[in-house]
Image 1 (cartoon, rainbow, N blue to C red):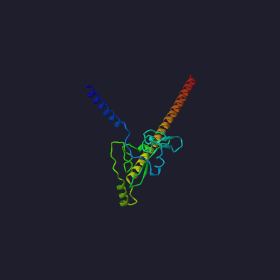
Image 2 (cartoon, helix red, strand yellow; image 1 turned 180 degrees about the vertical axis):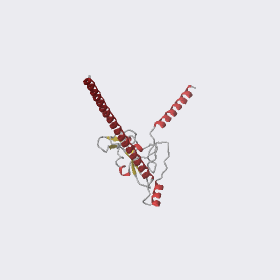
Image 3 (cartoon, rainbow, N blue to C red; image 1 turned 90 degrees about the vertical axis):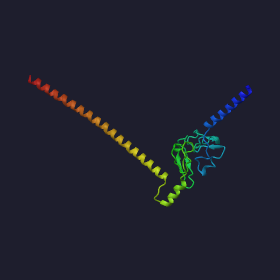
Image 4 (cartoon, rainbow, N blue to C red; image 1 turned 135 degrees about the vertical axis):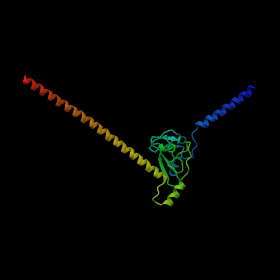
Length: 206
């Protein structure tokens, strides 16, 4: 009985360990995620150099979620390095590069959906659809990505305009306070001089 109980306990421990490993293991990604086809050869070696020449890193550190290179060379497919860029292949449409902050942010930026591989959303591949729309609508048509980028630029400009307005109002508020202080000082001087003249006049009359 004890042998059977030990075997069951061992089996349960193995199952629990496998479950924990599966839940903590990094997400499965296609090889060369976020890397352009022209750079695949560069990333194929066992030891890879950072683009800025500062250091090297082993191949198993590629896209491991930890930023080893200051320029983000080792993390083209994750958001670990703020300096890295994610390459969208967008087969059937125009390739593009994204800032690393837009990888796995819950928004489908690449038309092939490759930038959202580790989130609880499913990105539809709209590359061919965008291409068909471009052909049918002509040069005046802008793809979804272009419109999103244009919207983001407009929002950024609005934020800049709002910040400028706030700085302007802040400056006007400071100027108003300074003018009020100057006015109070002038009024104080005038009142004191008026009182002094009255006292002098009364003293002479006495």
